[in-house]
Amino acid sequence: MKGEIRKLLGEDLTNYLELMRAKLAFAEELYGVRMNYVPLVTEGEIVILDKNDGKIKWLRDKRPLTAEELSGLAEKIKENLESGYVEMLLTMNISCINTPGE
Image 1 (cartoon, rainbow, N blue to C red):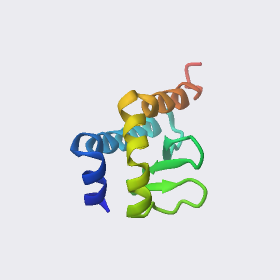
Image 2: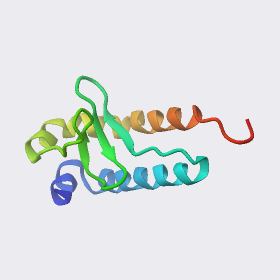
Image 3: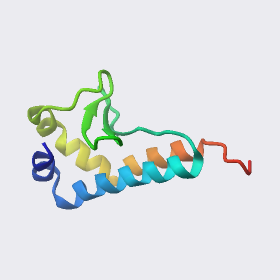
Image 4: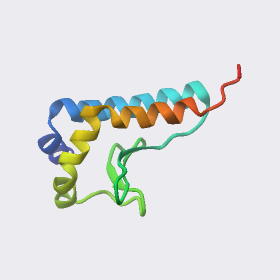
């Protein structure tokens, strides 16, 4: 499936997904709050990136997308990544966490 993701999203965006996983791990260490998922598609059925295994899944049942499902959603995922929408959602989640200094 990793090869399928690289083929559909491209090398840069696939690497960016890995960076998102690292950001989640960093936020967890810094704030002490677990964030296991990043939403990639929020219109209709929600699609997430799972921090733990790096798979793209449906939020409703945590089932990884099939190659056909991923192919159908690849353009929307690309659009959300390239526009900064996914990064904005992550930033909004982190900014809602009360840090020890607050």
